[in-house]
Length: 185
Ligand SMILES: [Zn+2]
Image 1 (cartoon, rainbow, N blue to C red):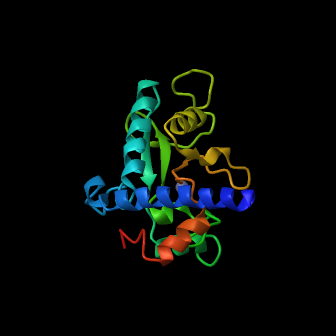
Image 2 (spheres, rainbow, N blue to C red):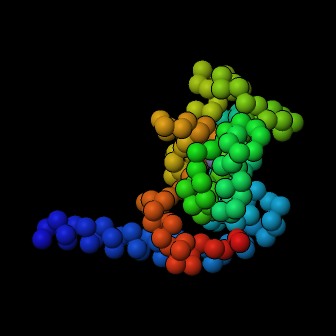
């Protein structure tokens, strides 16, 4: 009895978070109206926090830009095939519906120089604080509520930031199948 009550309240908390998230999604068009923008199709909270991370990083002497945000199921399948049935290196282990990018909840960054050129070196320490800039940005992102892919063990994904609202991919896939989160297709 105690156990099932606990489970029930867990589900209720999950549902209220979901509806909060779904409600906010309705304002998506305000977050980014242009499909050319890296912010297109992202949850407005992701956009707001991404801007904050960029600003805090700049204040600490680290420049970043965002390279990749929302990905439709089709485009996720296309990049999954890269390095498998199509040319190029493998860049993801996720098929459609297996990435938070597919639900507008993830964004990728890259370090840049003053001219906006991508800097991929893992040792880069532009602000000279003795901590690699990737890690600095990961820590800033976590301080504003993102999960950072640099902490993952199975597939370390340094550029990746995501918000999950406590929802697993299985939760998101279920709600997507019920017609939620199809805001950018
Ligand atoms: Zn990513």
